[in-house]
Image (cartoon, rainbow, N blue to C red; front, side, top):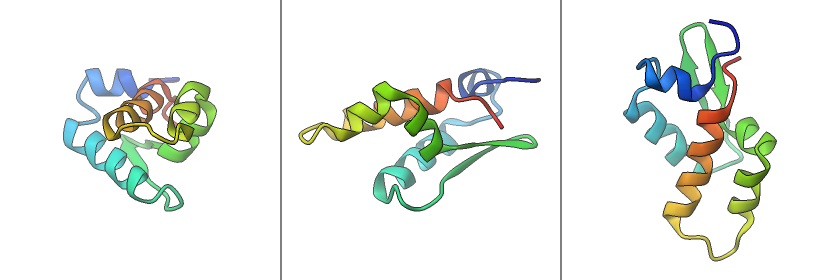
Length: 84
């Protein structure tokens, strides 16, 4: 599938809940370390997904954002990202 998004991959179970949760946790623990979600022969770079999704980047910049708010911001970016 060309131009599949993370959300589409998630719907058809190419990305599991466990893989998504682990990637989000790893990114939030240390955003400077590369975190990739493998999808068949492609992948999603979590940091790149956040950077290109302005709302998510803005949410992570909020100083007093709750952990749930931060997780949701990263999850949104990943699900909207195109698998590369």
